[in-house]
Length: 227
Image 1 (cartoon, rainbow, N blue to C red):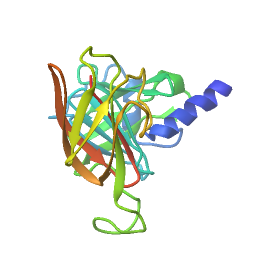
Image 2 (image 1 turned 90 degrees about the horizontal axis):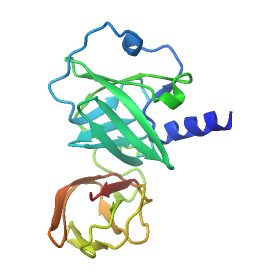
Image 3 (image 1 turned 180 degrees about the vertical axis):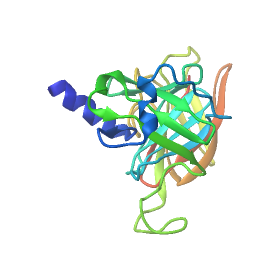
Image 4 (image 1 turned 90 degrees about the vertical axis):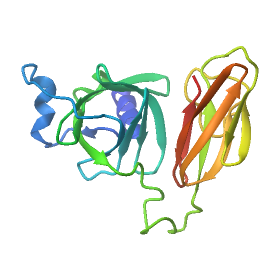
């Protein structure tokens, strides 16, 4: 029973699937092996949860990002060949099977650890990722400061010394590695406080280099892994 509560807590942290309830018929797809599905034109980009609960997922190359209703962003990995997304939550590997449809919808399946307690959940293509601050209209206000945090980290020693990260005119350094994604502000990571929105970054260490975009939400924590 203790393990069950732990799994439920982890699923609530990423806010991806719901507890057992009446949902759309497509949730039965994972039990119907004879049904044939076709892959949508592209799984990449942002998806919004379709059952009225505010949650998003986003896929960029081999990375997956989830955003819960508090604006907290969790980083994982995305596989287009299975397809699936996988997160390391408090040292536990949680893998969500995925199915994409031509009508712009996606069915997020339930991890094996919670197959008897949670439902598969429908998501739909979205023009945005995350609801910053959770209130107000337009682009800001509502009592927040309009800023969030971004942390750059690595899972291994590249043997090149310190990784220098540049974003939004500021620079920081990554000087140690972690086995799993650390919290924003962790020691040895390149930590930034940035305005909510998308920011491009570059990073370099010897012959290694990285570049891309981080999506910062108000009061949120975005963690970017430098592989």
